Amino acid sequence: MNNIPPIVHNVPSIEFAYLITAFLFYVALKYMNTPATAKLGNRIAMVGMLITVVGVFIGTDSDGLKLVNLAPAQLAIIVSGLVIGGLIGAISAKRVKMTAMPQMVAIFNGAGGATAALVAVYDLHHSLQLNPVLPPEAVASIFLSVIIGCLSFTGSLVAFGKLQELISGRPITWPGANIMNIAGFVAVIGCMVVAFFNLPGFPPTTAFAIVAVVSFFLGFLFVLPIGGADMPVVISLLNAFTGIAVAAGGFALGNNALVVAGAFVGASGTLLTLLMGKAMNRPITNVLFGAFGAVDTTAAAGGGGAAMNVRSASADDVGTMLAYASQVIIVPGYGMAVAQAQHAVKDLADQLEAHDVTVKYAIHPVAGRMPGHMNVLLAEADVPYPALFDMEDINPQFSQTDVALVIGANDVTNPAARADKSSPIYGMPILDVDKAQNVVVLKRSMRSGFAGIPNPLYEDPKTVMLFGDAKESVEKLAAVVKSL
Image: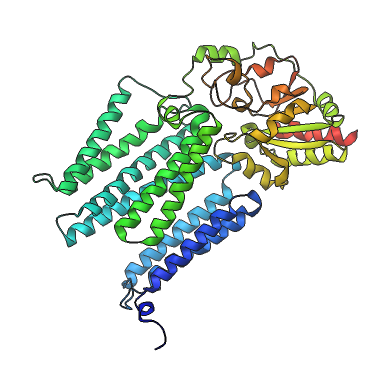
């Protein structure tokens, strides 16, 4: 021990735990780059978090003293919370359907935001006990944590409601909404300034309370006007918000593990949001403030209803067309998720490959209801990752494809994005399925997609519709192909 440099003796054991956790989080994030290693990445992150949780209970500071000294009753409350929360998370993850995974992500993200806000409440109370005058750095971290945490919490609740169709998925706007948003942000900034300079006659607790209440309502005002195909982008952005709130809370508490974890979530969520905006050819400002999807509902209903001039086909006809094709590109969408058809799709692909048909999957970056939704579903069905092609890689191949099989992907295959300047999705990159030799669309009905607009692809002369539940339809197609 005498040969160990003195500086090592002064390094708190909890800091070693935080360092290990940070490294494991980094490794986990790297493994999550591909579906093939994503499960391992999740497990590595779980181990890292476990190390930090255990470290808080048994770790020591630079003086060799334990970080926490809890009475048995206090320890029982904390352990009970960990057990109950862990059980709720585990049971929810096991029981939730893949179609409801975006809603689960939204609600869990909201819980993270609420937690960050509650941590800010505790830290404000603790800081004022030590010093009635908050130092500037404490004001910045505490107030940022409660602002972003409350906004993320209520914003995630609205996102959950839209995805669950408890409230309208279309943008909800009202006169004076922008004025209310601006007034709210001005009030928040004003209260922060008051607390930052410790102005007399306005205690920091009052400023904090005003900021918390205003931020709570700003979350509703922020997400209600957003709808349609922008919802995956919003979920990603709210996730980034929660990460930033957690990092701010980590600064307030002096907890490096929270800082690192929050920074990872905030940075990755922000990057993903920007990449998705780029993939949709829409600036993030347009997503947040453009009320995307605010279309003429009468026109949408008329264009997307039974009055459209479409051709339907039987499973036998479509199955024969697929079996004698040279190349088939499968385009999965939310319809596949709703019907839980991913395993049936994999079986159909196996049958086609047995007939020497080349099968590829076209993945649009915002297909489904959350980032990577289709990748997760297909990975669950053991679809080989090399068979999944991003939009920019697969689009040039549609013109050499015999059949494009679209499974409920409405908005991301809509040619109006290229041709109709009046369309709310004009300029959004889409999958060029209309350039294939033949297009087969599997749909339950002629109901429009999440953006609420009609799809002229369905009236294209080379497009046929196969109506019915996606899973049942795909199973029928696989049986036809197998019989040939």
